Amino acid sequence: MQRSQPSLDVCLLADGIGPRTIGGVSRWAMTLAAELPHRSFAMVGTHDELPPARVYHALTPLAAAAAGPAARAAGRPLLLTCHAMSNTWHPEGVGWLGVDASQGGGGGGGGGGGKGGDGKDFTVAHLTRRGYSEATLVGAVSGAVAASHVAAGAPADRTVVIPNGAALAPSSRRVEEPLVGFVGRLAPIKGLERLLRAMRAVRASRGDAQLVLVGPADGPPGYLQHLRRLADQPGLRGAVQFAGEDRPERWYPRLACLAMASETEGMPLALLEAMAHGVPCVAPDVGGIGETLGPAGVIVAPRCEESLAEGILRILDDADEAERLSQAARARARRWTTADTAAAYDALYAQLGLPCRASSC
Image (cartoon, rainbow, N blue to C red; front, top):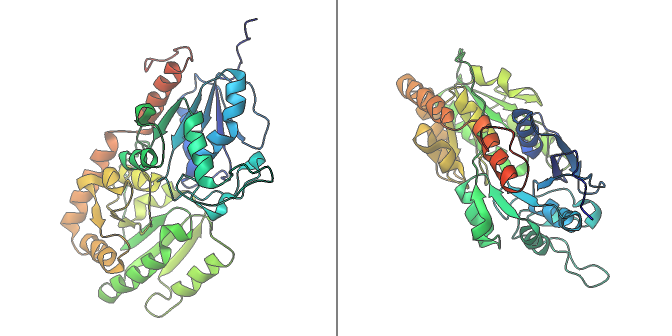
């Protein structure tokens, strides 16, 4: 007996993540759906009952592991997109698998979790490999992310790179002060203590330099208070603003530069968005940062506040260099946008059996 065709085109699957105004997998998913209005989308957690869909699209390896059996039972393909390096994504949980993934790297390579009462292996590394095996195809947001997941067990012959992109932005920069910005989650993996120490060194040379942190608190209990205490120390007091979960588009035009100090990154949306606005960027050489910035930004040594401070001062102290980087960033961002990312995924959906409804097919 032939199965009836579901009315839903794509069911996006994630867990341990929530809607984010700034960055995050959820924002990526919402942008993808908005760019493909000819496709019908739903986003559900892996603890929810999966609705009938023509394609299931997991946004983390653990979500693929959770949803794989249901997708197979329905006879539907499962696409997996890896957004982070294989051993650095830390979700809050894995829904109905009942695994606490917060103790290991949710992207793969971590060792969190344990064995269930029936002796089955529920470690994060095992579940991640299961996610790879369940996936019909594996996508990655950068070459560095793809390589890390292949090293962790993803099938190289079924792994493709589809870079993240940013929407084109108007040319409306109005930089009136040496304002350095960070956009993203206020979480330990973002290296914000290092960024604050770097800014203290910057202010030793540029006493008028300011820092704004734009993003939601997303660390362990007390982490935001810890950052506020650091920002209230001599050398920084009165120079750091915590803007909270504000719209980053309100801040990009005002920034003299955007600075990151992350432990690792896949292909960060904040960098791409800042580049699209023509904001010069400074970031460490970790994960997919080099692929993101290329020669259009200042790439500094990882986990080095001195190198980060030097990179920020290179922009603040040299107007010609700042303008060169601004133009180079905007030009690089134009090469691949959110529309290009969506078109590439639309082509993958067609490859997996969705009817072609756009020129990208």
